[in-house]
Length: 329
Ligand code: UT7
Image (cartoon, rainbow, N blue to C red; front, side, top):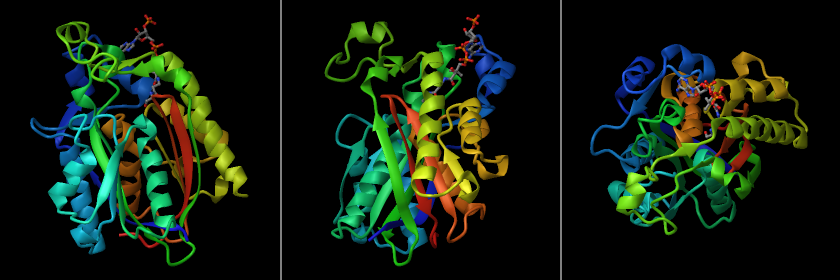
């Protein structure tokens, strides 16, 4: 039995921060950001909003679109590295907000691959036959962990979330295959040093700005290009397809140059590739479900289409998931 996506949703915060706004805060320029990354704007949550606020919007809309009652939800899985707090989980906060009285669930830390890892988990729950309705969300409030004095990182990220409802497939649509990887040797290249059990919050960790994201962009770039291109090409070949069989490639949006390199390796033309980094920046676990939801609403996906998802992120984590698109709300 396959699992299939039956509804999609996304939440993009209203507040927009442009490259010109950033020029006023750090030593950067609109021209540098656009040419090196492809980003023009990013959206940021309002005061008092957090990852669970975005996730609650997404989950509520998934229920509305699919005509699902809250008590019918079996599980909620949230891919995020910016949970509202270490515990309780963002999944539990969302469960309570939507009144999913029979659900269980958890948060999953896969950074930019968080949605792919969460989707894989949700798929396996459905395939077990025990669970019929699983909400899978990917989202991050990156503005909460960005150092707006560090031009190497603060220009790259934004806030946002998206999600899907998974149900058993009644036809040949569904999640066909996945290739997922982690390699902890890449950890030091992209991390947030403090706030966990190794360096709990203290005056010292705050003074040393250890509660913010730190990245060696060049090192990550090199691995990201190879990692995302490798798993994208591998899953296409493994399943007996070629690049031209893929209707839409929905890659993680970290840098337009990384996306272009992966797309080139798979032989995709530009109309096969979803790009929205210009508007949202890198929303970490949010990029792929936001892209899925946009493509769905824009009519870019029809029943029977092959959709390829691919991501690369902190950990390192990376992977690809191949989907035969079904009837989706
Ligand atoms: O999603 C999670 C995974 N993350 C990624 O995939 C990110 C991968 N890395 C990248 O996308 C790119 O490496 C960056 C966009 C982060 C940086 O681009 P780059 O072409 O690798 O630039 P660089 O780090 O080599 O920096 C080039 C120059 C440096 O100046 P010098 O040393 O040549 O004088 C930087 O100091 O650009 C400077 N620079 C900036 N200048 C203006 C770095 N950040 C900025 C900035 N504005 N924001």
